[in-house]
Amino acid sequence: MREPSVSRYAAGRLSPIRRVADLRRLRDEQFDVLVIGGGVTGAGAALDAASRGLKVALVEARDLAAGTSSRSSKLIHGGLRYLEQLELHLVHEALTERGLLSTRLAPHLVRPVPILVPLPAGNPAVRVGRRAYYGLGVAAYDVFAGLFGTGRGMPLHRHLSRDGARHLFPSLRADTVSGAIRYYDGQVDDARLVVNLARTAASLGAAVVTSARVVGFVREAREVVGVRVRDLEAPDSPEFEVRARTVVAATGVWSDDMSQMLRDVGVRPGFRVRASKGVHLVVPRSAITGEAGLILRTPTSVLFVIPWGGHWIIGTTDTDWKLDRSHPAASARDIRYLLDQVNTVLDRPLTTDDIEGVYAGLRPLLSGEAEATSKLSREHAVIEPMLGLMLVAGGKYTTYRVMAADVIDRAVRRLGGPVLPSRTDQLPLLGADGYNAAWRDRQDTARRHGVTAGVVEHLLERYGTLAVHLLAMVKADPELATPLAGAPEYLAAEVAYAALAEGALHLDDVLTRRTRISIETAHRGSESAAHAAAVMGDALGWDKAVREREIEHYLARVAAERQSQTMPDDAAADAARLGAADVRGFAADRGIDLLQVDL
Image 1 (tube, rainbow, N blue to C red):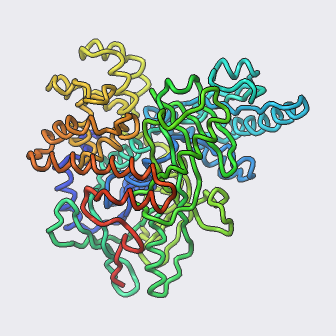
Image 2 (cartoon, rainbow, N blue to C red):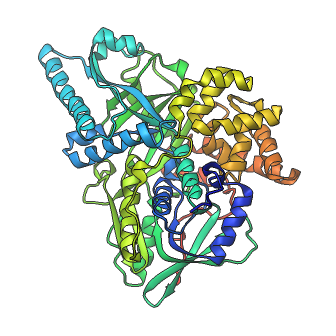
Image 3 (cartoon, one colour):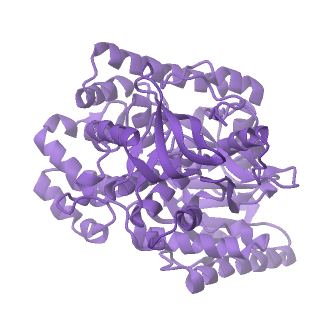
Protein backbone atom coordinates (compact mmCIF):
# COMPACT_ATOMS: atom_id res chain seq x y z
CA MET A 1 0.00 0.00 0.00
CA ARG A 2 1.18 3.53 -0.67
CA GLU A 3 2.21 6.00 2.01
CA PRO A 4 -0.71 8.24 3.08
CA SER A 5 1.38 11.35 2.32
CA VAL A 6 1.89 10.27 -1.32
CA SER A 7 -0.85 11.14 -3.81
CA ARG A 8 -2.49 8.40 -5.86
CA TYR A 9 -1.11 9.96 -9.02
CA ALA A 10 2.46 10.18 -7.74
CA ALA A 11 2.33 6.62 -6.44
CA GLY A 12 1.14 5.43 -9.86
CA ARG A 13 3.86 7.08 -11.94
CA LEU A 14 5.78 4.44 -13.91
CA SER A 15 8.87 6.63 -14.21
CA PRO A 16 12.49 5.63 -14.93
CA ILE A 17 13.27 6.19 -11.23
CA ARG A 18 10.31 4.00 -10.27
CA ARG A 19 11.58 1.19 -12.52
CA VAL A 20 14.97 1.20 -10.76
CA ALA A 21 13.24 1.11 -7.38
CA ASP A 22 10.88 -1.70 -8.44
CA LEU A 23 13.78 -3.75 -9.82
CA ARG A 24 15.42 -3.41 -6.42
CA ARG A 25 12.21 -4.58 -4.78
CA LEU A 26 12.09 -7.62 -7.05
CA ARG A 27 15.56 -8.60 -5.87
CA ASP A 28 15.10 -7.85 -2.18
CA GLU A 29 11.49 -8.62 -1.21
CA GLN A 30 9.23 -11.64 -1.08
CA PHE A 31 5.83 -11.05 -2.64
CA ASP A 32 2.46 -12.58 -1.87
CA VAL A 33 1.58 -12.64 -5.56
CA LEU A 34 3.89 -12.38 -8.57
CA VAL A 35 2.08 -11.93 -11.88
CA ILE A 36 3.76 -12.91 -15.15
CA GLY A 37 2.31 -11.02 -18.11
CA GLY A 38 1.49 -7.36 -18.68
CA GLY A 39 -1.62 -7.76 -20.79
CA VAL A 40 -5.12 -6.87 -19.65
CA THR A 41 -5.56 -10.02 -17.55
CA GLY A 42 -2.15 -9.76 -15.90
CA ALA A 43 -2.51 -6.06 -15.16
CA GLY A 44 -6.03 -6.70 -13.89
CA ALA A 45 -4.79 -9.49 -11.62
CA ALA A 46 -2.05 -7.25 -10.22
CA LEU A 47 -4.62 -4.54 -9.48
CA ASP A 48 -7.04 -6.99 -7.89
CA ALA A 49 -4.36 -8.42 -5.60
CA ALA A 50 -2.92 -5.02 -4.67
CA SER A 51 -6.39 -3.66 -3.89
CA ARG A 52 -6.83 -6.48 -1.33
CA GLY A 53 -3.72 -5.38 0.56
CA LEU A 54 -1.40 -8.09 -0.79
CA LYS A 55 2.24 -7.46 -1.65
CA VAL A 56 2.29 -7.70 -5.46
CA ALA A 57 4.75 -7.64 -8.35
CA LEU A 58 4.10 -7.76 -12.10
CA VAL A 59 6.77 -8.59 -14.67
CA GLU A 60 6.41 -8.35 -18.44
CA ALA A 61 8.99 -9.39 -21.03
CA ARG A 62 8.11 -6.61 -23.46
CA ASP A 63 5.84 -3.63 -22.92
CA LEU A 64 2.46 -3.31 -21.26
CA ALA A 65 -0.20 -4.59 -23.70
CA ALA A 66 2.51 -5.52 -26.21
CA GLY A 67 0.61 -8.62 -27.33
CA THR A 68 -3.08 -9.37 -27.76
CA SER A 69 -4.22 -6.57 -25.46
CA SER A 70 -3.24 -3.80 -27.88
CA ARG A 71 -4.52 -5.50 -31.03
CA SER A 72 -8.24 -6.00 -30.44
CA SER A 73 -11.28 -4.53 -32.18
CA LYS A 74 -11.24 -1.74 -29.53
CA LEU A 75 -14.69 -2.78 -28.27
CA ILE A 76 -16.01 -3.40 -24.78
CA HIS A 77 -19.03 -5.48 -25.69
CA GLY A 78 -21.41 -8.08 -24.41
CA GLY A 79 -20.94 -10.37 -27.35
CA LEU A 80 -24.15 -10.01 -29.33
CA ARG A 81 -23.41 -13.19 -31.26
CA TYR A 82 -23.21 -15.21 -28.01
CA LEU A 83 -26.95 -14.68 -27.62
CA GLU A 84 -27.47 -16.64 -30.82
CA GLN A 85 -25.22 -19.37 -29.44
CA LEU A 86 -27.31 -19.33 -26.20
CA GLU A 87 -24.23 -18.59 -24.07
CA LEU A 88 -26.38 -16.36 -21.90
CA HIS A 89 -24.04 -16.41 -18.91
CA LEU A 90 -21.25 -14.95 -21.07
CA VAL A 91 -23.54 -12.18 -22.28
CA HIS A 92 -24.67 -11.43 -18.72
CA GLU A 93 -21.09 -11.33 -17.47
CA ALA A 94 -19.80 -9.15 -20.30
CA LEU A 95 -22.68 -6.65 -20.17
CA THR A 96 -22.17 -6.25 -16.43
CA GLU A 97 -18.49 -5.46 -17.02
CA ARG A 98 -19.36 -3.09 -19.86
CA GLY A 99 -21.62 -1.13 -17.54
CA LEU A 100 -18.99 -0.95 -14.80
CA LEU A 101 -16.25 0.25 -17.14
CA SER A 102 -18.34 2.88 -18.89
CA THR A 103 -19.94 4.37 -15.79
CA ARG A 104 -17.61 3.85 -12.85
CA LEU A 105 -14.21 2.29 -13.51
CA ALA A 106 -13.01 3.99 -16.70
CA PRO A 107 -15.56 6.42 -18.19
CA HIS A 108 -12.65 8.42 -19.66
CA LEU A 109 -11.58 5.40 -21.72
CA VAL A 110 -14.84 3.53 -22.45
CA ARG A 111 -17.62 5.40 -24.21
CA PRO A 112 -20.71 4.44 -26.25
CA VAL A 113 -20.37 3.79 -29.97
CA PRO A 114 -23.48 3.30 -32.16
CA ILE A 115 -23.48 0.20 -34.37
CA LEU A 116 -25.92 -0.73 -37.13
CA VAL A 117 -27.10 -4.26 -37.83
CA PRO A 118 -28.04 -4.00 -41.54
CA LEU A 119 -31.15 -5.96 -42.51
CA PRO A 120 -30.67 -7.58 -45.93
CA ALA A 121 -32.98 -6.87 -48.83
CA GLY A 122 -35.32 -9.60 -50.03
CA ASN A 123 -38.99 -10.43 -50.52
CA PRO A 124 -41.37 -8.95 -47.92
CA ALA A 125 -41.70 -12.17 -45.94
CA VAL A 126 -37.92 -12.54 -45.66
CA ARG A 127 -37.53 -8.90 -44.64
CA VAL A 128 -40.15 -9.21 -41.91
CA GLY A 129 -38.59 -12.43 -40.65
CA ARG A 130 -35.08 -11.02 -40.55
CA ARG A 131 -36.17 -7.85 -38.76
CA ALA A 132 -38.05 -9.89 -36.17
CA TYR A 133 -35.11 -12.28 -35.68
CA TYR A 134 -32.42 -9.63 -35.34
CA GLY A 135 -34.73 -7.31 -33.43
CA LEU A 136 -35.42 -9.98 -30.85
CA GLY A 137 -31.71 -10.54 -30.38
CA VAL A 138 -30.85 -6.87 -29.94
CA ALA A 139 -33.84 -6.37 -27.62
CA ALA A 140 -32.63 -9.28 -25.50
CA TYR A 141 -29.19 -7.67 -25.44
CA ASP A 142 -30.71 -4.46 -24.06
CA VAL A 143 -32.81 -6.41 -21.55
CA PHE A 144 -29.75 -8.23 -20.26
CA ALA A 145 -27.92 -4.92 -19.90
CA GLY A 146 -30.87 -3.25 -18.17
CA LEU A 147 -31.75 -6.09 -15.81
CA PHE A 148 -28.31 -7.45 -15.04
CA GLY A 149 -25.84 -4.75 -16.13
CA THR A 150 -24.42 -2.63 -13.30
CA GLY A 151 -25.23 0.81 -14.69
CA ARG A 152 -25.90 0.15 -18.35
CA GLY A 153 -24.07 3.26 -19.61
CA MET A 154 -25.43 2.76 -23.14
CA PRO A 155 -28.56 4.04 -24.96
CA LEU A 156 -31.30 1.62 -26.01
CA HIS A 157 -31.56 0.11 -29.49
CA ARG A 158 -33.77 1.52 -32.25
CA HIS A 159 -35.26 0.12 -35.48
CA LEU A 160 -34.52 2.07 -38.67
CA SER A 161 -36.04 2.05 -42.14
CA ARG A 162 -33.89 1.82 -45.26
CA ASP A 163 -33.86 5.62 -45.53
CA GLY A 164 -33.10 5.95 -41.83
CA ALA A 165 -30.20 3.50 -42.09
CA ARG A 166 -28.74 5.30 -45.09
CA HIS A 167 -29.18 8.66 -43.37
CA LEU A 168 -26.90 7.42 -40.57
CA PHE A 169 -24.63 5.51 -42.96
CA PRO A 170 -24.84 7.00 -46.47
CA SER A 171 -22.15 4.64 -47.75
CA LEU A 172 -24.49 1.65 -47.40
CA ARG A 173 -25.56 0.30 -50.78
CA ALA A 174 -29.29 0.90 -51.08
CA ASP A 175 -29.87 -2.36 -52.97
CA THR A 176 -28.37 -4.52 -50.22
CA VAL A 177 -30.42 -3.38 -47.21
CA SER A 178 -34.06 -3.08 -46.26
CA GLY A 179 -33.32 -1.23 -43.04
CA ALA A 180 -31.20 -1.63 -39.92
CA ILE A 181 -31.24 -1.85 -36.15
CA ARG A 182 -29.03 0.56 -34.23
CA TYR A 183 -27.61 -0.56 -30.89
CA TYR A 184 -24.72 0.61 -28.74
CA ASP A 185 -21.61 -0.99 -27.33
CA GLY A 186 -18.50 0.43 -25.70
CA GLN A 187 -15.35 1.58 -27.46
CA VAL A 188 -11.93 1.63 -25.80
CA ASP A 189 -8.29 2.26 -26.57
CA ASP A 190 -7.28 -1.18 -25.36
CA ALA A 191 -3.58 -0.43 -24.75
CA ARG A 192 -4.33 2.71 -22.75
CA LEU A 193 -6.73 0.78 -20.52
CA VAL A 194 -3.97 -1.73 -19.74
CA VAL A 195 -1.53 1.08 -18.90
CA ASN A 196 -4.12 2.58 -16.55
CA LEU A 197 -4.69 -0.78 -14.89
CA ALA A 198 -0.96 -1.22 -14.29
CA ARG A 199 -0.56 2.34 -13.02
CA THR A 200 -3.52 1.94 -10.68
CA ALA A 201 -1.95 -1.26 -9.33
CA ALA A 202 1.33 0.64 -8.88
CA SER A 203 -0.53 3.39 -7.01
CA LEU A 204 -1.56 0.71 -4.49
CA GLY A 205 2.00 -0.46 -3.98
CA ALA A 206 2.54 -3.06 -6.71
CA ALA A 207 5.99 -3.31 -8.28
CA VAL A 208 5.52 -3.11 -12.07
CA VAL A 209 8.52 -3.87 -14.27
CA THR A 210 8.50 -4.24 -18.05
CA SER A 211 11.40 -5.55 -20.16
CA ALA A 212 11.78 -8.14 -17.41
CA ARG A 213 11.78 -11.58 -18.96
CA VAL A 214 11.05 -14.64 -16.84
CA VAL A 215 13.55 -17.33 -17.77
CA GLY A 216 12.82 -19.98 -15.15
CA PHE A 217 10.87 -21.01 -12.08
CA VAL A 218 12.37 -21.27 -8.62
CA ARG A 219 11.20 -24.49 -7.01
CA GLU A 220 11.49 -26.08 -3.60
CA ALA A 221 10.45 -29.75 -3.59
CA ARG A 222 7.16 -29.84 -5.56
CA GLU A 223 6.30 -26.18 -4.96
CA VAL A 224 6.98 -23.10 -7.08
CA VAL A 225 8.33 -20.35 -4.82
CA GLY A 226 9.40 -17.75 -7.38
CA VAL A 227 10.95 -17.10 -10.78
CA ARG A 228 14.25 -16.17 -12.36
CA VAL A 229 14.25 -12.90 -14.27
CA ARG A 230 16.50 -11.24 -16.82
CA ASP A 231 16.44 -7.44 -17.15
CA LEU A 232 16.36 -6.90 -20.90
CA GLU A 233 17.36 -3.26 -20.52
CA ALA A 234 20.63 -4.46 -18.98
CA PRO A 235 21.36 -7.61 -21.03
CA ASP A 236 24.85 -8.06 -19.60
CA SER A 237 23.66 -8.14 -16.00
CA PRO A 238 23.10 -11.54 -14.36
CA GLU A 239 19.71 -13.14 -13.92
CA PHE A 240 18.16 -12.79 -10.49
CA GLU A 241 15.52 -14.53 -8.42
CA VAL A 242 12.16 -13.07 -7.42
CA ARG A 243 10.58 -14.87 -4.48
CA ALA A 244 6.81 -15.17 -4.18
CA ARG A 245 4.33 -17.20 -2.18
CA THR A 246 2.15 -17.52 -5.29
CA VAL A 247 2.98 -17.11 -8.98
CA VAL A 248 0.16 -16.22 -11.39
CA ALA A 249 0.85 -16.76 -15.09
CA ALA A 250 -1.42 -14.65 -17.30
CA THR A 251 0.49 -15.33 -20.49
CA GLY A 252 -2.32 -15.52 -23.03
CA VAL A 253 -1.33 -17.26 -26.25
CA TRP A 254 1.93 -18.34 -24.60
CA SER A 255 0.04 -20.46 -22.04
CA ASP A 256 0.67 -23.67 -23.96
CA ASP A 257 4.41 -23.10 -23.71
CA MET A 258 4.07 -23.40 -19.96
CA SER A 259 1.68 -26.31 -20.28
CA GLN A 260 4.14 -28.19 -22.49
CA MET A 261 6.93 -27.62 -20.00
CA LEU A 262 4.71 -29.00 -17.26
CA ARG A 263 4.00 -32.08 -19.39
CA ASP A 264 7.74 -32.59 -19.77
CA VAL A 265 8.02 -33.18 -16.01
CA GLY A 266 4.92 -35.36 -15.82
CA VAL A 267 2.38 -32.71 -14.80
CA ARG A 268 -0.92 -32.48 -16.65
CA PRO A 269 -1.65 -28.78 -17.23
CA GLY A 270 -5.44 -29.16 -17.46
CA PHE A 271 -6.17 -27.10 -20.58
CA ARG A 272 -4.85 -26.11 -23.98
CA VAL A 273 -4.94 -22.71 -25.63
CA ARG A 274 -5.16 -22.13 -29.37
CA ALA A 275 -4.17 -18.87 -31.01
CA SER A 276 -6.65 -17.33 -33.41
CA LYS A 277 -5.34 -14.55 -35.64
CA GLY A 278 -7.48 -11.46 -36.01
CA VAL A 279 -6.47 -8.87 -38.63
CA HIS A 280 -7.81 -5.31 -38.72
CA LEU A 281 -7.55 -2.58 -41.32
CA VAL A 282 -7.54 1.15 -40.58
CA VAL A 283 -8.83 3.54 -43.25
CA PRO A 284 -9.42 7.32 -43.11
CA ARG A 285 -12.83 8.57 -42.04
CA SER A 286 -13.23 10.16 -45.48
CA ALA A 287 -13.15 6.73 -47.16
CA ILE A 288 -16.58 5.82 -45.76
CA THR A 289 -19.48 8.15 -45.02
CA GLY A 290 -21.27 7.21 -41.84
CA GLU A 291 -22.06 8.25 -38.28
CA ALA A 292 -22.28 4.75 -36.81
CA GLY A 293 -20.47 1.46 -37.07
CA LEU A 294 -21.60 -1.74 -38.79
CA ILE A 295 -21.70 -5.37 -37.76
CA LEU A 296 -21.88 -7.85 -40.65
CA ARG A 297 -22.00 -11.61 -40.94
CA THR A 298 -19.16 -13.31 -42.82
CA PRO A 299 -18.63 -16.97 -43.73
CA THR A 300 -16.31 -17.49 -40.74
CA SER A 301 -17.21 -14.90 -38.10
CA VAL A 302 -18.56 -11.36 -37.84
CA LEU A 303 -17.11 -8.20 -39.33
CA PHE A 304 -17.08 -4.83 -37.58
CA VAL A 305 -16.72 -1.46 -39.26
CA ILE A 306 -16.15 0.89 -36.33
CA PRO A 307 -15.55 4.67 -36.28
CA TRP A 308 -12.25 5.45 -34.56
CA GLY A 309 -11.67 9.20 -34.31
CA GLY A 310 -10.66 10.34 -37.78
CA HIS A 311 -10.52 6.74 -39.01
CA TRP A 312 -12.47 3.50 -39.40
CA ILE A 313 -11.37 0.13 -38.03
CA ILE A 314 -12.44 -2.85 -40.17
CA GLY A 315 -12.06 -6.35 -38.78
CA THR A 316 -11.62 -9.06 -38.05
CA THR A 317 -10.43 -12.35 -39.47
CA ASP A 318 -10.59 -15.49 -37.34
CA THR A 319 -8.03 -18.10 -38.42
CA ASP A 320 -5.77 -20.57 -36.66
CA TRP A 321 -2.18 -19.34 -36.17
CA LYS A 322 0.78 -21.57 -35.30
CA LEU A 323 3.70 -19.31 -36.24
CA ASP A 324 5.52 -16.52 -34.35
CA ARG A 325 3.29 -15.34 -31.54
CA SER A 326 5.20 -12.21 -30.63
CA HIS A 327 4.68 -10.53 -34.00
CA PRO A 328 1.70 -12.10 -35.81
CA ALA A 329 1.67 -10.99 -39.43
CA ALA A 330 -1.17 -9.99 -41.72
CA SER A 331 -0.88 -11.37 -45.24
CA ALA A 332 -2.22 -10.04 -48.52
CA ARG A 333 -4.84 -12.80 -48.33
CA ASP A 334 -6.11 -11.47 -44.98
CA ILE A 335 -6.32 -7.94 -46.34
CA ARG A 336 -8.12 -9.04 -49.49
CA TYR A 337 -10.61 -11.07 -47.45
CA LEU A 338 -11.54 -8.06 -45.30
CA LEU A 339 -11.87 -5.76 -48.30
CA ASP A 340 -14.02 -8.28 -50.15
CA GLN A 341 -16.35 -8.69 -47.17
CA VAL A 342 -16.83 -5.01 -46.41
CA ASN A 343 -17.22 -4.08 -50.07
CA THR A 344 -20.37 -6.18 -50.35
CA VAL A 345 -22.29 -3.42 -48.54
CA LEU A 346 -20.40 -0.22 -49.51
CA ASP A 347 -21.43 2.00 -52.39
CA ARG A 348 -17.78 2.88 -53.08
CA PRO A 349 -15.56 -0.20 -52.79
CA LEU A 350 -12.40 0.20 -50.74
CA THR A 351 -9.01 -0.72 -52.21
CA THR A 352 -5.58 -1.21 -50.75
CA ASP A 353 -4.87 2.43 -51.60
CA ASP A 354 -7.36 3.45 -48.91
CA ILE A 355 -5.54 1.57 -46.16
CA GLU A 356 -3.62 3.63 -43.60
CA GLY A 357 -2.76 0.90 -41.13
CA VAL A 358 -2.96 -2.84 -40.60
CA TYR A 359 -2.56 -4.74 -37.35
CA ALA A 360 -2.84 -8.38 -36.35
CA GLY A 361 -3.45 -9.88 -32.93
CA LEU A 362 -3.87 -13.34 -31.47
CA ARG A 363 -6.84 -14.37 -29.35
CA PRO A 364 -6.11 -16.99 -26.68
CA LEU A 365 -9.00 -19.46 -26.97
CA LEU A 366 -9.52 -22.53 -24.80
CA SER A 367 -9.15 -25.45 -27.17
CA GLY A 368 -12.06 -27.79 -27.81
CA GLU A 369 -13.30 -30.22 -30.38
CA ALA A 370 -14.20 -27.61 -33.00
CA GLU A 371 -11.78 -27.14 -35.85
CA ALA A 372 -12.77 -23.52 -36.49
CA THR A 373 -11.37 -21.07 -33.96
CA SER A 374 -14.55 -18.99 -34.23
CA LYS A 375 -16.38 -21.89 -32.54
CA LEU A 376 -13.99 -22.27 -29.61
CA SER A 377 -14.99 -21.12 -26.17
CA ARG A 378 -14.54 -17.52 -25.03
CA GLU A 379 -14.78 -18.69 -21.41
CA HIS A 380 -11.75 -18.67 -19.16
CA ALA A 381 -10.17 -21.20 -16.86
CA VAL A 382 -8.00 -21.04 -13.74
CA ILE A 383 -5.90 -24.03 -12.76
CA GLU A 384 -3.09 -24.80 -10.30
CA PRO A 385 -0.96 -27.43 -12.04
CA MET A 386 1.74 -27.21 -9.35
CA LEU A 387 1.67 -25.91 -5.81
CA GLY A 388 2.30 -22.17 -5.88
CA LEU A 389 1.64 -21.77 -9.63
CA MET A 390 -1.68 -20.53 -11.02
CA LEU A 391 -2.51 -20.40 -14.72
CA VAL A 392 -5.34 -18.26 -16.07
CA ALA A 393 -6.26 -18.33 -19.75
CA GLY A 394 -9.07 -17.89 -22.24
CA GLY A 395 -11.81 -15.32 -21.77
CA LYS A 396 -12.21 -12.04 -23.61
CA TYR A 397 -10.95 -8.52 -23.14
CA THR A 398 -14.25 -7.21 -21.76
CA THR A 399 -14.27 -9.70 -18.87
CA TYR A 400 -10.64 -9.23 -17.79
CA ARG A 401 -11.77 -8.11 -14.32
CA VAL A 402 -13.74 -11.32 -13.73
CA MET A 403 -10.75 -13.41 -14.81
CA ALA A 404 -8.45 -11.43 -12.55
CA ALA A 405 -10.77 -11.76 -9.55
CA ASP A 406 -11.11 -15.52 -10.13
CA VAL A 407 -7.38 -16.20 -10.19
CA ILE A 408 -6.67 -13.97 -7.19
CA ASP A 409 -9.53 -15.63 -5.26
CA ARG A 410 -7.71 -18.90 -5.86
CA ALA A 411 -4.41 -17.38 -4.76
CA VAL A 412 -6.00 -15.95 -1.60
CA ARG A 413 -7.37 -19.34 -0.62
CA ARG A 414 -3.88 -20.74 -0.95
CA LEU A 415 -2.28 -17.90 1.03
CA GLY A 416 -4.76 -18.13 3.89
CA GLY A 417 -5.29 -15.47 6.52
CA PRO A 418 -7.75 -12.57 6.59
CA VAL A 419 -7.67 -10.96 3.14
CA LEU A 420 -10.32 -8.66 1.73
CA PRO A 421 -12.52 -9.95 -1.11
CA SER A 422 -12.17 -8.44 -4.58
CA ARG A 423 -13.27 -4.81 -4.68
CA THR A 424 -12.17 -3.81 -8.16
CA ASP A 425 -15.81 -3.34 -9.18
CA GLN A 426 -15.78 -0.29 -6.88
CA LEU A 427 -12.30 1.04 -7.72
CA PRO A 428 -12.05 3.75 -10.41
CA LEU A 429 -8.86 3.65 -12.44
CA LEU A 430 -6.46 6.58 -12.43
CA GLY A 431 -8.00 9.42 -14.42
CA ALA A 432 -11.60 8.33 -13.78
CA ASP A 433 -12.19 10.24 -10.55
CA GLY A 434 -13.99 13.50 -11.33
CA TYR A 435 -14.03 12.83 -15.08
CA ASN A 436 -17.63 13.90 -15.70
CA ALA A 437 -17.04 17.23 -13.97
CA ALA A 438 -13.77 17.72 -15.85
CA TRP A 439 -15.53 17.13 -19.17
CA ARG A 440 -18.28 19.55 -18.23
CA ASP A 441 -15.70 22.23 -17.35
CA ARG A 442 -13.41 21.63 -20.35
CA GLN A 443 -13.99 25.10 -21.84
CA ASP A 444 -12.90 26.75 -18.58
CA THR A 445 -9.87 24.48 -18.39
CA ALA A 446 -8.85 25.45 -21.92
CA ARG A 447 -9.11 29.17 -21.10
CA ARG A 448 -7.08 28.80 -17.90
CA HIS A 449 -4.27 26.96 -19.64
CA GLY A 450 -4.25 28.98 -22.84
CA VAL A 451 -5.00 26.08 -25.17
CA THR A 452 -7.92 25.26 -27.43
CA ALA A 453 -10.94 23.34 -26.22
CA GLY A 454 -10.05 20.68 -28.80
CA VAL A 455 -6.70 20.05 -27.09
CA VAL A 456 -8.38 19.67 -23.70
CA GLU A 457 -11.00 17.29 -25.13
CA HIS A 458 -8.31 15.20 -26.78
CA LEU A 459 -6.35 14.93 -23.52
CA LEU A 460 -9.43 14.20 -21.40
CA GLU A 461 -10.46 11.37 -23.71
CA ARG A 462 -7.03 9.80 -23.41
CA TYR A 463 -5.96 10.61 -19.85
CA GLY A 464 -9.11 11.59 -18.00
CA THR A 465 -8.42 13.87 -15.06
CA LEU A 466 -4.70 13.13 -15.40
CA ALA A 467 -4.82 15.56 -18.34
CA VAL A 468 -4.00 18.36 -15.89
CA HIS A 469 -0.51 16.91 -15.52
CA LEU A 470 0.12 17.11 -19.26
CA LEU A 471 -1.19 20.67 -19.29
CA ALA A 472 1.23 21.49 -16.47
CA MET A 473 4.09 20.01 -18.53
CA VAL A 474 3.10 22.22 -21.46
CA LYS A 475 3.03 25.28 -19.22
CA ALA A 476 6.50 24.48 -17.89
CA ASP A 477 7.91 23.78 -21.37
CA PRO A 478 5.91 25.37 -24.23
CA GLU A 479 7.87 23.27 -26.75
CA LEU A 480 5.82 20.30 -25.55
CA ALA A 481 2.69 21.96 -26.94
CA THR A 482 4.08 21.38 -30.44
CA PRO A 483 2.09 18.88 -32.52
CA LEU A 484 4.08 15.77 -33.29
CA ALA A 485 5.60 15.68 -36.78
CA GLY A 486 3.50 13.53 -39.10
CA ALA A 487 0.73 13.14 -36.50
CA PRO A 488 -0.56 16.62 -35.66
CA GLU A 489 -3.44 15.34 -33.53
CA TYR A 490 -0.89 14.29 -30.88
CA LEU A 491 1.23 16.66 -28.78
CA ALA A 492 4.92 16.29 -28.04
CA ALA A 493 3.89 16.37 -24.38
CA GLU A 494 2.24 12.98 -24.80
CA VAL A 495 5.54 11.41 -25.81
CA ALA A 496 7.34 12.92 -22.82
CA TYR A 497 4.53 11.88 -20.49
CA ALA A 498 4.63 8.31 -21.81
CA ALA A 499 8.32 8.11 -20.92
CA LEU A 500 8.08 9.88 -17.56
CA ALA A 501 4.84 8.47 -16.17
CA GLU A 502 3.55 5.56 -18.28
CA GLY A 503 6.50 3.18 -18.36
CA ALA A 504 7.41 3.59 -22.05
CA LEU A 505 11.03 2.54 -22.56
CA HIS A 506 11.34 2.50 -26.35
CA LEU A 507 10.14 4.49 -29.33
CA ASP A 508 7.96 1.58 -30.43
CA ASP A 509 6.16 1.66 -27.06
CA VAL A 510 5.09 5.26 -27.72
CA LEU A 511 4.25 5.16 -31.43
CA THR A 512 2.44 1.82 -31.25
CA ARG A 513 0.74 1.69 -27.84
CA ARG A 514 0.81 4.95 -25.83
CA THR A 515 -0.35 6.60 -29.05
CA ARG A 516 -1.76 4.87 -32.15
CA ILE A 517 0.39 6.68 -34.69
CA SER A 518 1.67 3.38 -36.11
CA ILE A 519 -1.80 2.46 -37.40
CA GLU A 520 -3.43 5.87 -37.81
CA THR A 521 -1.03 7.33 -40.38
CA ALA A 522 -0.30 6.21 -43.91
CA HIS A 523 3.42 6.49 -43.16
CA ARG A 524 2.90 4.15 -40.14
CA GLY A 525 4.79 6.55 -37.87
CA SER A 526 7.97 6.76 -39.93
CA GLU A 527 7.56 10.53 -40.36
CA SER A 528 7.03 10.92 -36.61
CA ALA A 529 9.92 8.75 -35.44
CA ALA A 530 12.67 11.39 -35.39
CA HIS A 531 10.59 14.00 -33.55
CA ALA A 532 9.27 11.45 -31.05
CA ALA A 533 12.77 10.07 -30.45
CA ALA A 534 14.06 13.60 -29.77
CA VAL A 535 11.33 14.27 -27.20
CA MET A 536 11.65 10.84 -25.62
CA GLY A 537 15.43 11.09 -25.64
CA ASP A 538 15.29 14.39 -23.76
CA ALA A 539 13.00 12.81 -21.16
CA LEU A 540 15.09 9.66 -20.69
CA GLY A 541 18.55 11.09 -21.27
CA TRP A 542 19.31 9.19 -24.48
CA ASP A 543 22.53 10.10 -26.28
CA LYS A 544 22.73 10.45 -30.06
CA ALA A 545 23.60 6.79 -30.59
CA VAL A 546 20.58 5.55 -28.63
CA ARG A 547 18.23 7.93 -30.46
CA GLU A 548 19.51 6.75 -33.82
CA ARG A 549 19.26 3.10 -32.80
CA GLU A 550 15.64 3.56 -31.65
CA ILE A 551 14.70 5.20 -34.95
CA GLU A 552 16.50 2.50 -36.94
CA HIS A 553 14.66 -0.28 -35.05
CA TYR A 554 11.30 1.39 -35.54
CA LEU A 555 11.76 2.02 -39.26
CA ALA A 556 12.91 -1.58 -39.74
CA ARG A 557 9.76 -2.79 -38.00
CA VAL A 558 7.56 -0.66 -40.26
CA ALA A 559 9.36 -1.93 -43.36
CA ALA A 560 9.02 -5.56 -42.26
CA GLU A 561 5.31 -5.16 -41.57
CA ARG A 562 4.71 -3.52 -44.92
CA GLN A 563 6.53 -6.35 -46.68
CA SER A 564 4.63 -9.02 -44.76
CA GLN A 565 1.33 -7.50 -45.89
CA THR A 566 2.25 -8.12 -49.52
CA MET A 567 2.94 -11.82 -48.96
CA PRO A 568 0.43 -14.37 -50.28
CA ASP A 569 0.03 -16.53 -47.16
CA ASP A 570 0.79 -16.82 -43.45
CA ALA A 571 4.14 -18.58 -43.80
CA ALA A 572 5.55 -15.99 -46.18
CA ALA A 573 4.12 -13.09 -44.15
CA ASP A 574 5.62 -14.52 -40.95
CA ALA A 575 9.05 -14.88 -42.55
CA ALA A 576 8.93 -11.29 -43.79
CA ARG A 577 7.84 -9.89 -40.44
CA LEU A 578 10.67 -11.69 -38.66
CA GLY A 579 13.13 -9.78 -40.82
CA ALA A 580 13.11 -6.97 -38.24
CA ALA A 581 14.84 -7.61 -34.92
CA ASP A 582 12.95 -6.96 -31.70
CA VAL A 583 14.03 -3.72 -30.06
CA ARG A 584 14.38 -5.53 -26.74
CA GLY A 585 17.05 -7.70 -28.22
CA PHE A 586 15.86 -11.28 -27.96
CA ALA A 587 15.03 -13.80 -30.65
CA ALA A 588 11.49 -14.38 -31.86
CA ASP A 589 9.49 -16.67 -29.60
CA ARG A 590 9.27 -19.82 -31.64
CA GLY A 591 8.57 -23.14 -30.03
CA ILE A 592 8.90 -23.38 -26.27
CA ASP A 593 11.15 -20.58 -25.18
CA LEU A 594 8.91 -18.23 -23.21
CA LEU A 595 10.25 -19.86 -20.07
CA GLN A 596 13.04 -22.34 -19.60
CA VAL A 597 11.83 -23.99 -16.43
CA ASP A 598 14.30 -25.49 -13.97
CA LEU A 599 12.26 -28.37 -12.56
